[in-house]
Image 1 (cartoon, rainbow, N blue to C red):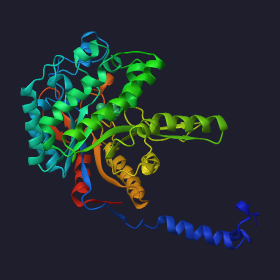
Image 2: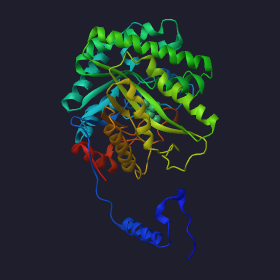
Image 3: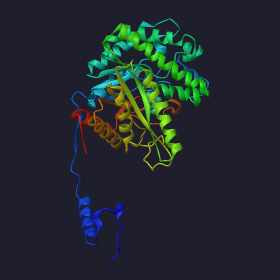
Image 4: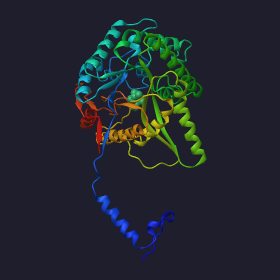
Length: 419
Ligand code: GCO
């Protein structure tokens, strides 16, 4: 008989008899069917999807992205999904797909088209939108600012301008004073670090800068702006729940010292620094999870249509890091571009399995909102990527539910996943 090598000197292969016996048992086992596993989510768990104004509403002509589109620097959003008019239809679909929550954003450029001139017609529009959410049994999550700036504000230098924070707080206060009673959950800023990085360091989004100092400045201004808006909202309506939608990346490294340091630094700088600075000014954390970055060689992973690695365990890793803030957590975005819809169901289930694991370990996750309800305008990539649970026909604006959306609907309705 060929002598077997015995890993780490364990005793199971001490003789040539035991080894084949064990291998046979393992082979039989691997043919056996996995027992179906049922993972129950906590009572009252929120299930839904997210959108953002400029990406779905259509007809917005007075913000920095429309200006950049006119200059040919980014694709135009045009009529988008026409959700400005078709929102009832969208909410009806969401409801029929078992959702009990929905996240959307308010377009600053609609509410304050010129400095200091507020448009109450638009407030009334969003009043109808939020009332419709509630009428459809969808708990509203409202983002006050999701990347796009009114022209006038951008022209003054955006968040780097001298009175930027004051303008932003005034806008947010104006909205919350009028619409605050229509939603419990308010998100001040969406993904501040991505905004700072794409707009000020990589130069891919308005204002197309590549300046590391401005990148750091803008990140700092956004933390201060968040804290001021938090205080403003609390002074107006103390019972509202106010948070941020923070995109955290799962950073890992191999054992090389330099890689370990790089991963540690990025984890602090990208994931935790912002949250540390606002830790006394948030009632919940909204977590957006999409990305995995390994310093050192990484395993081959499946990819979305955007070429992004699919790494569901990463959501667990980033959730564990949020424990120290002792706040309820809502997954305010998680999703993938998948035009063929052949990866989405597994993507959602695998991420939910890891979220479930985090909950078992004491992380207070209270909701999951998939990005996105609809195929929509994916920023510098235009309408190419298909993130939607629902397909949108760009000519007819017709909506068509994707098969994966029905699988997700079952999870939402039953408040559990089965494997
Ligand atoms: C962001 C936003 C969304 C995106 C989504 C997919 O992360 O950029 O919150 O607006 O469309 O994340 O990239």
